[in-house]
Image 1 (cartoon, helix red, strand yellow):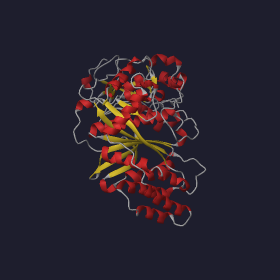
Image 2 (tube, one colour):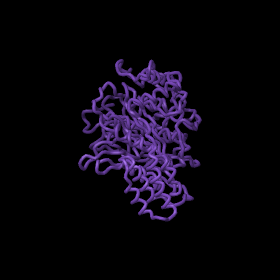
Image 3 (cartoon, one colour):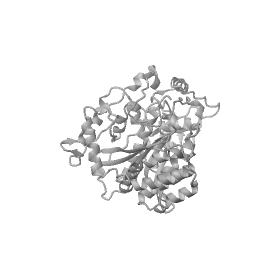
Image 4 (cartoon, helix red, strand yellow):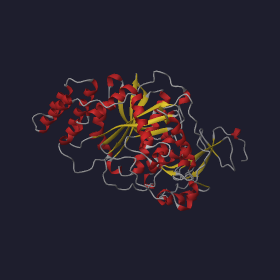
Amino acid sequence: MSAEPSIFKAPLVELANTCFICSKTYIAPQKLRHHFKKHGINVPERPVGVRCHDTPDYSFVKADGKHPDIQKHFGCLSCPAHFKLLNDLKDHLINDHPKSMPPAPQHQESNDVSPHSPKKRSVDEIVDVDDVDTELMDHLCLLIIPPCDDDRLMIGDFDATDAFYNFQQSLLAHKWKLSLEDHIQYAMASTSILFLSRNQYSEDFLPFFDEHNLKATIDRVDTIYDIKKPRMPTNVVMEIIKIIEDLLSTATTREKAAIKLFGLDLTTNEYKFAKAIAELVKKLPRVSLAEESNEMELCSRYVDPFLCGIFDEPDEGVFLRWTNETILEAKKQQSLLSWRSDICITRLQGVKWKANIGFGEAKPAHQGSNHYSVCRDLLRVSVFCKDALDTQKMMGTMGLQIVGRTITFYILVLPSSGLYIMHELAKIKIPDCLNDLPKLVTDISDVLLVLDVFDRICIPSVDCPHPKRHRLTISSSIFDQLFFYISKS
């Protein structure tokens, strides 16, 4: 480069032509545009005369080689936009040039989804055979910090913290990148999160955790945090079902049924459940609708009334928000949190949002059979929860994953050094009509469990955790070297 950086009034930026699917970089924009077609992406050419001009914020340069004063940004091939993160370039194409992206596949409805029943993609779906060399990852890209000797999660003689550390280390033994949907446990472990769900065990865990040790680890976490399902309050169930039956028989109106539900003599969390039922009474049709709900109607008619009923506490300054915007923690650091969260459960301080204590992702039912999409959302939720726990010094944070009308609730905690645990609490399915509402009432014990955990654990930690306990969230660029996390579909 012929000129010294000091003559420029703004930071120097070099635009890279990089694929956000396989991270391959090309010298010329036309070569990248041709490469995108292999992934089913057709990026239109930038109009003649439209280019990136120097501004007070950036000066654009073409460098002959690496230079410490030059920032690398990823430029859009269709307009002057450019971004520091590849994932932001992908979001830009989806939002501002949607016709560039391939159409989403059509799937049949599937509400009960688990990230452990994979629908695998072939290599050709992930990356073109000409780019297979890009799958070889740099074994030096991931720094895994050993746990502290005096801060371990022990279950008898079994050291769960050490087993998880060795599981993380084994990620570097792989020669090729891993697909996200087939290795969600490894994807979470790359950012220090152990994903636990009863009766679901991944082969990736062997030989570090066997089924017995995983179950024992779940039991130990339940004991530490006093996570236990309460007994079903039969009298409450019968009172609520009686009100619903009167509504179904037209012996009462929706308005009167809701008033009766609000008037029941209940405990605090039982009242929240009854409030959620009352909100659904106002919204649900009497019989199932013939047409499948889109994402907006799914949120407004089925999921939102229930979730707002159990989580919203305006007098306590707690609100469930459909945000779909960059969350508070994302403004503090560049990480996977540059993604957007569909849902935030947020505490209010005065007239400003203070802290996010829960996060959720929502998808319509037809996307439920897309195992990649389900795992991607689960990873997003876990990362949001982890970074909120770290930055806000929380005891735990709540995670929600919504597919169709099925809501899965998680709690993320940090029981030992470098070991964040994402623990599945319950799975609830919202009915699609009043006739099926009594089925939801029988799930009251699961809902009361979620509310008890939320009230007791999703709070600031009394004892300030030692900084050595925490681990940095993996960056997008390093994650790209380890996993395929952008689907061709």
